[in-house]
Image 1: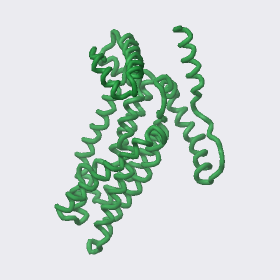
Image 2: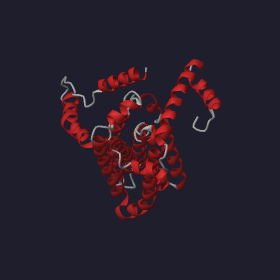
Image 3: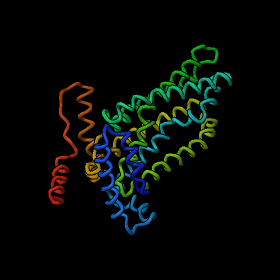
Image 4: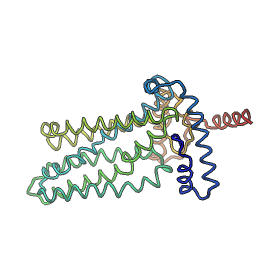
Amino acid sequence: MKKGRYVDAFKSLCRLRNSELQAARDMYYVHCQLVEEFAVLQGTTYFSRFYELFTIPRIRRATLASFVVMIAQQMCGINIIAFYSSTIFVQAGYSSRSALFASWGFGLVNWVFAFPAVWTIDTFGRRNLLLSTFPNMSWTLLATGFCFYIPDSSGAKIPLIALFIFMFAAFYSPGEGPVPFTYSAEVFPLTHREMGMSWAVATCLFWAAVLSVTFPRLLSTFGSVGAFGFYAGLNVVALVMIFFLVPETKQRTLEELDYVFAVPVGRHASYQATEFLPYWIRRYIFLRKTTLKPLYNFDEVDAMEEKKDELSA
């Protein structure tokens, strides 16, 4: 529609909706958004919008959150296995042929366990998926490293290393696998969405390159146990960053997301430490019935939207 291909856009929407009327409704809604976007962007340049990713408070918070989820994808250690899985399995005692089959198995597990995210990412939530999978990725990597202490003469060494690597992939796939790209694509306002998503993906791929260059040196210096222990620790660091810096975005409209990212980072972090964490401990560890004080009041957003509709009418 940005390129004037409205007929093609309508055909696509008809495939996505149950009726042509619904497709026409959504097409008109998108058209109105584009009109507003073009009006806002008039007179701006590529470089000015990039600069605004870090200068406008609401957009800066979205930039920070997308940066955290993207760099966490590399901190979790997935690509040390994706890039060097054959090397890791050979060091574990596999033959070259068996290592290739084990690498194929890792990819298969990664693919299969991505399917739960289809049903949970909009119900359980993006943030909850990350917070529930990162601790499990940490201990599975640590267990993988410790398995290298098992003597080569033991028949349990090779299967256990493969088991914990596959378990790591199973925890990664529904969480840190799909969430960063989903999250980064929705946190920015329409005026900066393309720019913000480009920055987020560039962050992810830059650190993937850093990881691929540094891991062989890390492996030769620390050994398999030290390398896996190092990334297990980074999982914990990433968990803390997500807990304090990444707000939940599931089932939120653009207007509600503007409200979410209008909350200062310090206030969000303080809420997580003083309200959410004590609530979670009381509720899920001590099994006490308790209520959580909300951070956001979306009734204010609804009232503002109703007022806008009245003014426009």
